[in-house]
Length: 259
Ligand SMILES: [Zn+2]
Image 1 (spheres, helix red, strand yellow):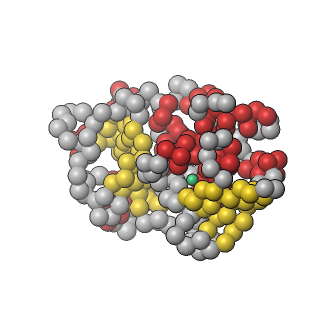
Image 2 (image 1 turned 90 degrees about the vertical axis):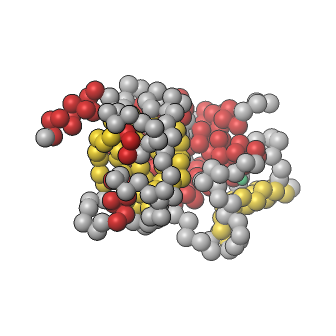
């Protein structure tokens, strides 16, 4: 028996000989798991295992978009595979990664490793800067959402970066910070940020990249420090996906060329 959920995911990948994008229907077929759609109301998904029957049930009363559903199915496969998880699991708010329940976190770690295997990802991000373009490119390659991909990349990146969701009322939901990131984001609306401008102006493009003073976003920062802000308006969700990275010399000289 393994100690970590990720090891079970690696086992599935190698025993079924899978490469990204991971084919979840093939996994379900091999494991004889059926995926059903029913109205569940208060839950996002269920796993029910009884003698001879293995069922994942996805709530069809909400509009779950395809990539979220994909992560949800991977999460439920995790509950099925991890030996110490019970035969009945009721899951909600899966992709938010907010749960403090160990079992739910383990199923999410399994799903992250299954869909974006570390061994494959490390090759894809080696010597690369964390940019929105990289996150988008790899999200497409692995067939996962931007949020899931940003979390995976920042888990292993040496850069000082943070990925967050910015809402019209100024609320921010931090998705992931890289290990070396230690700045504190200001409370409330960040009115000088591109993220804020994207939500308040109708005349901007859906995506903005800027090198700005670090003090715009962060507490107690020296004015001369610079960060790269890349923000993308997600019109279907009414929010902005933002990536902040401490600027390096290349970013700053690129900026000087722009003027
Ligand atoms: Zn669960």
